[in-house]
Amino acid sequence: MSMLASYLTLAAVLFCIGLYGVLTKRNAVVVLLCIELMLGAVNLNLIAFAKYGVVPSLAGQIFSLFAITVAAAEAAVGIAVLIVLYRSRATVNVDEYDRLGR
Amino acid sequence: MFPFNLNPTGEFFAFFALAVCAITGAVMALSLAKVVHTALSLAFTFVSLAGLFILLGAEFVAFVQVLIYVGAVTILMIFGIMMTKHRDEERERGRPLLETLAAVFCLCLFGILFFAIRSAGFPVPETALPADNTTEIGTLLFTKYAVPFELVSVLLTAAFIGAVALAKREEEPA
Image 1 (spheres, rainbow over the protein chains, first blue to last red):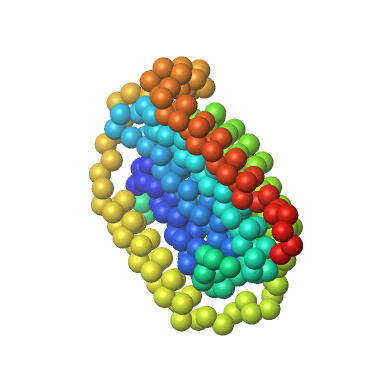
Image 2 (tube, chains in turn yellow, green; image 1 turned 90 degrees about the horizontal axis):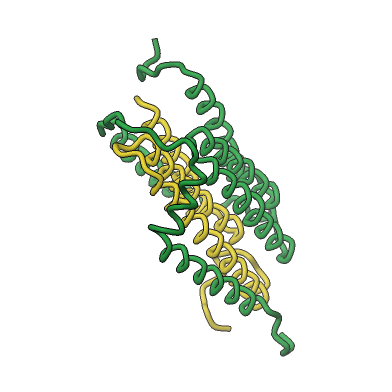
């Protein structure tokens, strides 16, 4: 097993932990954090392939920069939506977010 | 010898230590009861990921990871935790069927991924990355990837204006 396979396995472990958190956790903030964990695992894949891929190039690192930027935007909008929902429902439990309107 | 015919180099030991840190942080994040502890534990995972990026020769991405994830995203989540009320321990357990199903699904996904990774043959790269990554990334961002770079800045501006507009307290009494 080469180093690339080790990095890919670690990324798979982190992705699956994040997926389990997204599927089972009730708290909306924890769900958002687990989505960030999954995105971080994907970034690890991109950067591992940027070094150990067939043709090493910086494109993987640049893609991961774009992914980090989009993840930051997603976190900001997610927290804003969460705060608006909290004002109208007075809960952060995702089970109770079953309507978009009031 | 090692079962996976690994060569025990310094990079492998550094990788192993950082991987243990990352997985520990992620598992702790799922098992801790308080939400603030979850956020801090995931910050630990993100720092470990930044260490792995440095190990992979991506210094600039590692610093961006620390700045954005640990500095901005985690603090934003902690603000979100502070601004909402959490009933932490009450009603934490009680969905064993869903949790078992999710665990089985995640384990199956990991098994498929692991089998695919083990069975794929990765050829050894012929060339190496340039030594000064940061200079090269800067050059590439402003030449080859100039249009996506500007589009991402437009996306960021739109997202932050949208976030402010969403979270702005409305005047009407709720």
